[in-house]
Image (cartoon, rainbow, N blue to C red):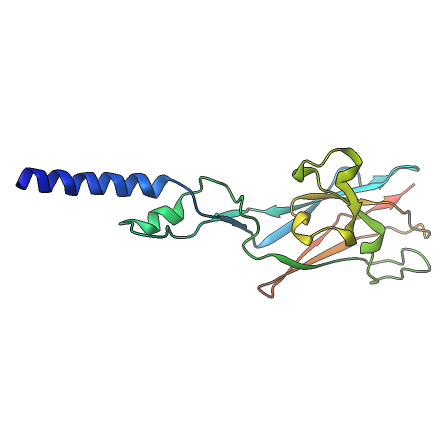
Length: 183
């Protein structure tokens, strides 16, 4: 009888360890900083500015396992699905501005988001279906993404673009582009 109790206790322990390693709950990704990467800060005539917006040091966050588990903390620490549940704190708004006058309609500090397209390449839509005006895209698709500026500034000034992302938890993440110039 004692052997059977020890066996059942040991079997329960093993099953609990195994259940801690099975990821069947929604998990999220979180980050505290964003960055803007630009392949070429000197944009040639006829080309568009391409900016990549990425999370810096993303962390994958899980939820404790529902139901009976001897090790819920171990369960929450395992990253088996790598954030497929989306952003832990969704994006509520996106703002893009320049430190210089872009043209007569967009003076310095004016919202430039209407001039950008978003390539949602991470969501595997085919061809041109994945490139949409930034204002028509779910803000959650911004991280990671490629932004395409489809207009050229009229003034021949160097620009530094600022992207501000506000999240539902109330914080704002800010990133600046390198100095950009058009030929």
